[in-house]
Length: 554
Image (tube, helix red, strand yellow):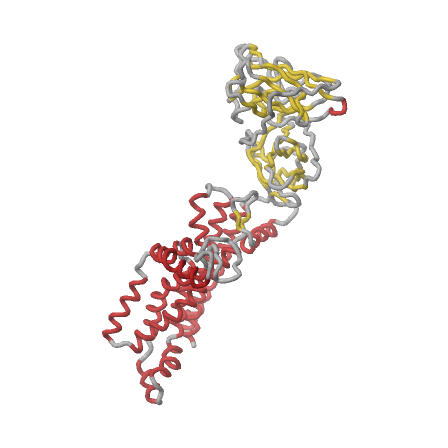
């Protein structure tokens, strides 16, 4: 009956352990998968930030055969520009039109005759504004398409060239504020608010640019966008790719081929056909020529799930602040294991040896003296050990081994080994003390001496407790944070020797969490590292329990 209950208990324990492991791996995968098959774009105003390219003054007008008139309304920091400011139009970086700003009913307007040639029809016109109060030139958000068919903008509803904050206020004219601000085909001023990107979108295929495949799931006001709407990808204000939205089940998906160079920022916009307006998205991402952004809707979710999980665990590049970030933690795992195993190499001989001496060799007075001293090591703060490694051990290693730096695997292993000695010594000494005395007497009765009895009788009898102490020391060492931050070196790499620096998992979490923005991929990656670290310690304890039960049954 007892055997039956024991089997049930073991079955429940192993099943719980298995589901716990699967659940933890699921957490890690969900952190990077985020529960969606593709990039989701919730639509809103596009937050453009910095990076404006200044067109240098004085502007040298380049005259061409033809011209097209453009009407521009100019705002500076959400306020109408002044009459002393100036607007210029540029095509391919050449100044093709200049106009002074005039005040018309509270609106700052400029009229430009844009010089161009017949062959340049369809090119993008960019605008720049000279702010005399700051004596500086700003690139405007407004753009237009050169087509010669009609004037660009109208005097009442001009192109808006807003140069300050991306979140602009409605028109501030003193008169005609109730006028019908209907959508005007051919300009980017709709409903009294600016539209960042102008249709029709004309993709620019830059020579030498690579292709980034972007998978987008499009939602408008929390609902899937309509099939037939169009998505545009923009780099530096230039259209680099377009795609038509398609329905797949309940999702609205689009696949864009984005022409760009490495590590450029892609911004997205959507043409809402029902509302006849362009809406910027609040999502940006980095280009990766030859690669992909998002997750392909044609690949099964389970495949993408485990692909991201394996890239995270077995990826060898940890560069979370690069663009795009790299979040492979294999170097961190290897660093933690090397430092921990090195600590055990130091701690096991001294820990088990001291336990044998205290339990079997030392006199009662010596035992009372040595045991508290060893246990006192466990009460020393880890930061003190770290300072000892930095100030004392590191210079010694540099001198002895002719190293450029003393913060490396060897330093961290020695310090961690000293910290783990009390745990291994205390638990091993308890295990040795629990060996029945009749085994010792029987060994002595057969003619064995003290050392033969210790090695061939007592240690095998206490093997379970000694192994458990070593495994507990392993868990203590791999979870240590302060020491490895201070003396391991902090370099996320695969080391060639014990004299090179590494970055263990605990060091990465502690050093980077305080400087990581909440909700970013880097933030989630650090939690993923914590989950992996928990799994390793959990497996260590599970193995310890298995060893204990097997020894008990044997």
